[in-house]
Amino acid sequence: MLNEPRSGRLAAWGNALIAGLVSPDEAVHRITDDGALHRVEGLPGEGTPVGLTLALGRLRALGATGLRVALPVPGHPLGLCGPPEFNARALEAGEAVLATGAGLGLVPETYEAGPEGGAAPDVHVEVVWRCLPVREVLPADVPSLGEAERELAEALREATEVLSKLDVAGSGPVAEAALETYRARAEAGRQVLAPGYPPRAVRVLELAQRVGALIGIAHAAGGDGEHGGAVSSSEIAARAAALRPVERTARRAQVAAYNSAAEERERHRR
Image 1 (cartoon, rainbow, N blue to C red):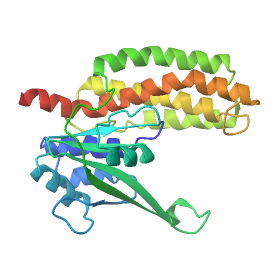
Image 2 (tube, one colour):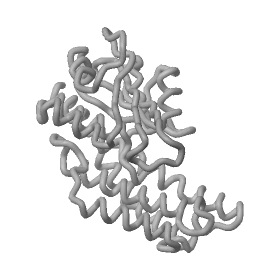
Image 3 (spheres, rainbow, N blue to C red):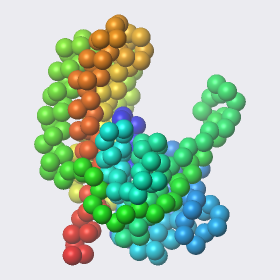
Image 4 (cartoon, helix red, strand yellow):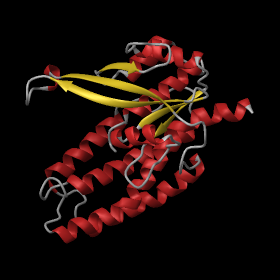
């Protein structure tokens, strides 16, 4: 969860474009800042995959008034609203974007090509966003920004306590590297969300990412390189159980932050 989901960038800058706060070129530049080639396949009226500029324009023409994010995992269909085919694809990808007003959703599929074990510049990454119909109903289990902020404050305390009890906080070179990566990203002054988002959404997303960083450290710091300092199956299971509700809270908060712009626009339209 330390890394920003692709669906988050697409929704954030797509919402800024829909609101007229950024140009199409700026929105697409920000969305594709990951260096991958993005295309949209299955868009109504298009027989072949199209680029993001055309796709975002077409979604607006089809009635999209805002973009929302879903970050589902097995047992927690966060942000999904059906039908089953869309839900299944989104669950497999772990994320999706829903275009409110257009009855459409986008699910990313990532493809990589290049020499095995090659360096990043040698690997070509392509993201194909599959466009599918979705139901126009309220998504599942998405809190308000206020709820998310309150839940996160408690989750941050819980995550810190879990790390301390399991003796993984700051342990080993992997933990140190993860912490340094998070600090570098935070200090870089990156734009967390696009124009048009309330300051509270920025605070919530930053805190959710901080909690996510701690969760990542708990699972990867030191030890066996995958489950931190845990050396037995019982310790691994205990750590996973302790962190599961914290991770759930952080994902809920991320979705609340990314969806806040679309929700604000919807309130103003009523």
